[in-house]
Length: 581
Image (cartoon, rainbow, N blue to C red):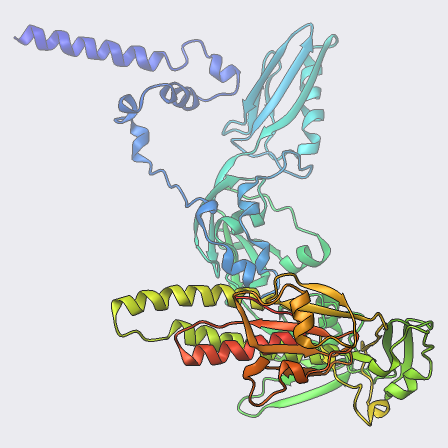
């Protein structure tokens, strides 16, 4: 038994000795600039995971930071802090460029050396701990501390000492040293992050989720090695001027983001409506304008002072505000405080004059009509006015009515399960109808034809005056079988025109017919059942009228019926559109 154990021990010793000798039996790795450890690692990489499980390398923890693609950068993108949207994961996904002329070669870098001519050689050589690479036949060449742009000249000088002629050389940095850098301070994810010594500060900051917009400084980003600050970067220089210092990082360096300093919030007519940081206690408006970049239309600046419990507001002309000083927490708004001088209005439709006029501020419709030359086909008694402010107001009223209808439809109560099912189906139809109604745009028409003070009405910038054409047509629209334009005949009644359009559809409400006059006024006809409005037989139809036949509203709730009826009339009057259910 003792002899068996001795034989086993002898076999193990032989295996261990052979393995150790096999690391670099001929010194080839050293000749190529590769350490024995690199050879062992290369060989172990080829072994299965089970065979490597017991290797001494497993004692070193493999720190794997969270992938930048897994971090949510949406807060940076939506932040109002200037520079926060710089960090979106793009820098973290992209490494540094391979050529930086000022990069200083360090231990662990890989140098690609090529020799050709009388002697051929092509391999990456790793800078050993002594700072050398071993070039075949030329021996060790010290490259530690050499700038990237001087590398070729240095290697070529070493080769030409050995090969006087017929051997040519080329050397370049193949891969920078892999490093792990600590990112600390006011960033979203402080930690240890991997990269190379050539990667920029932005690469590591982006891996850390970027600078915390609420707490971190974009003006002071320090690179520390031990207790010494090696470099300080100002990211505003990169954002505004495109300059970024090339800082070569080493393993164990610390990128520290300082706390945010003073800041002001900028809004209004500027290209960069953001929150800006500044280093000094005060910041002039002129310095702020250089980075906020006011638009050409800005004329004044409003400053809301951060003065404690009392609110103070200053207002300056932009030309006089350059010397005004701002403090921490102030809010600045750039505005256009321009006195109106002239307005622009358009004249459309049937006329012979120009289509656009520039009038002094305060001009009236009568002043404009003096310039309009009518044609023989112009209906000058039915001039129409369309105004943007009225259109916006009509849109607001329509949206408010639709919101009310949505709330009523969604909150209607039911007594039984069958009633609840019917309510649900009814609500779905109503909501679909509401979505279609939201897409309708009112015309913004102002009824002026019958006003005795029409010519005294003030014009607004952007007004459109439309002169209708005497075309002799009557439009039939809405719930009729064949919506159409019909030639005007004085002898025909409203019912006659509807019948010529095919009559009412099954969904039509004969008690709700609206006649839109060419001058912008409306008349409601109620058929034979009308009580408060004119019956169809009493409504006179004129050339240029538009007849709108509204649909029936078949809902269970009286409140919903009332709201939908109101909205139908709103749409018919403001946009001359019949929105069917």
